[in-house]
Length: 317
Ligand code: FAQ
Image: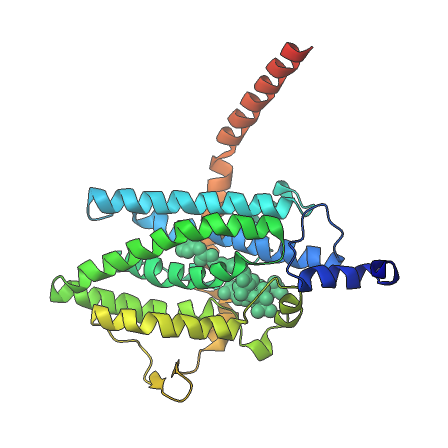
């Protein structure tokens, strides 16, 4: 009865406020749909581009066990990309369009993947810190208001926790190894710490999307809240490794019950986001090459699917 007097927008907000999931065929404000396409596709692209820095090390993993684990992790990332592209497609954008946005360089993907992986310890640091940061953000997203995205995130998070553990285990082994291995781990931590902090996005006061996304429960925590959670959770892990966080301002604050930390270089962050990071150009080039070289696989899979459909049609005719 009451709903008859409410606008569609207000009815929608009421559903969100009462904790209901929004599904693909439900009415939704155009901006809600677009925000999701933006965020889910950026996330999917991040998974796909995120395979490149690690793929770089599969052939050079130091043992068969490490190679198998890294290979499995990279395959998982391809799978995450697929779940996420499928979730984005439920909002009315095609896979072709999404691919074109990535390959042409118009789409954003996470800044973190524009840094180079120069040593084996980087595989440890990426798994531990990058997947660690990704999980903090993604556990929140399992409760996001759009059903297909939330459900994809549940499965992704289970796999991400394996990724984080394989990274931390690499770091632990190296830190319990020779002096040179420990130094290699410290070097990796020095290079990946700040870029991992940047993954959570700009400070809340400079985040144009946060306010509306919190209202629509797309985000349930702000960029700064998640970043703080990452610091509080990761610093004790650094101590177990016997390494040092490359931040002279890092210190425990008894009053707040959190770590205080130094200032992030936001100029570097925006520079990388705008395409001027160390690896932006190479990532895009590699991605385009992979796309072109994979054409025969896509053609083969489509031809097979067409044949199967033809067979099914004949059977039912
Ligand atoms: N890099 O207003 P906000 C992974 C952009 S998955 C580049 O705060 P929002 C797995 C943002 O798009 C990692 N751009 O934006 C893995 C916006 O630009 P736009 C990816 C960034 O959306 C591990 C502008 O700045 N995870 O790592 C970044 O409310 C290891 C203003 O920012 C996800 O995508 C950035 N770091 O909050 C794979 C999770 N941060 O679009 C392989 C889903 C911000 O208006 C190996 N995404 N920007 O032109 C999210 O939760 C959100 O989109 C945020 C940003 C939190 C990333």
